[in-house]
Image: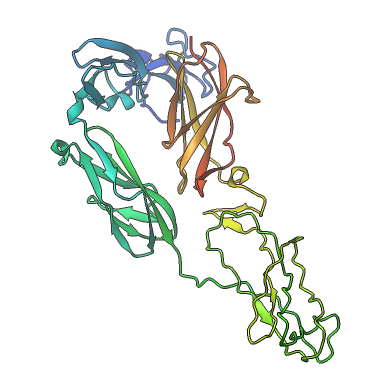
Length: 433
């Protein structure tokens, strides 16, 4: 509890609450004897008999926020509490012009009565931005200048604001020069100051270089007197052509998402010089871990010596690393079914006028966006969803006097697919009349 002021009062007299100092933006509601605001202080009957503390209940002042069209015509007026945010209405469409924003941002933190006017520019002067690169891979310490272009040419000198969503991965200068800092992914966003149009470039920063290593190929052990080892292949008589040898290849594994390049092992070759008069015997090939399909192929010979190729075994599904957890996959898994443990903290869900609610949550680093789910029941039956990249969203066209349940989760792109994190905690809000 903050101390408002101290009054010196003669014993047996009362405290005049009308003389209390006001706090900017708030009105004094009532004065109470306790911090729970259950026992009101009555200036007419209550007397001061010794040192005491009284508790002042405050109410925020309300201010008028009026949104207007460019010609001054009123769109709507909202009564907003001190330091609260007004909900900007949908701008009126004007033929031949494009809406570029409001005349002030003061409606986002109201401290007084204000008028907010819509701003427009002719369509031919509406500035847009595009980048030459959608993504770029760098090593820590490297720099890269993003090439961008503003159209139309008449607006090429309009200021552009640059920002990185994760400065621990890469930072960007006012001229669009990116410097790689640490391993990970981030998005560089360029925003046209006049219109708010945006363009993005995904930056991937590699960690310490690692040389890819090949998985060792299993080769049969050859002893002086091998047990169940492959018998040597005899060279056919000079007047006969060698018979084709049937080899077996393992089934091709389903491709999986991986951060590291796939490495194909080179098959090892085991050969022994046979005796010339021995009749050829069948060759035993090693069986892969998965049941292969039999496809006869013509064996390649060199210097009349048959070769037995031992194919590499199918590789088990890899573990794809993310910034704080792991996404487990296998040969039969698609990225649609990947799970991710990162969780968003839902901060505020607030009811606004005209059957709208606003949800705000804590920003997570190294994510591609957020998905919001809302429903009129806690089991989220017949729920609706919205996908955004910001840390807040205004949901409209809700049913009045209904209670809605809201939750949010982050998602990350993996091989073009969305991988979702855990749902946040659920917050409920009742729509105003």
